[in-house]
Image (cartoon, rainbow, N blue to C red):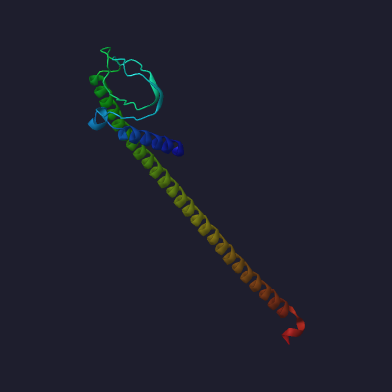
Length: 176
């Protein structure tokens, strides 16, 4: 579970950094108003056509190509600047929110991991304490059993000595 969450966190952070690293629309004025001069030898050229329609180009002629960001016709191709700014602001806001969400998820995962490791540590300590107590009880039992056997052996020795003395005193030749 934790590996899956960390993987999703990494993916979210990567996406957030990619979105944040993209330049804002209209932010680089040099690129927005730049024109590219392209010198090329093409197959046919015809410069007599005054409008910006397709021109025939002859082989060996040099052609200048200008690239502009403004549409040539008033047809309104693309989105207005307001919408572009709005979309950019929303994407930056969502990036910020996704980074905060990723940080909160990471914090929660760290907290859960810390609680789980603390719980495991406490269980290990409890198990070790239980084993030590059981070992102490077993040792005490063995000591008690050993003491009881020693007492029984002492009593048996004493009883055997008493029997031998009684037999010795009962013997007629021992009383002379």
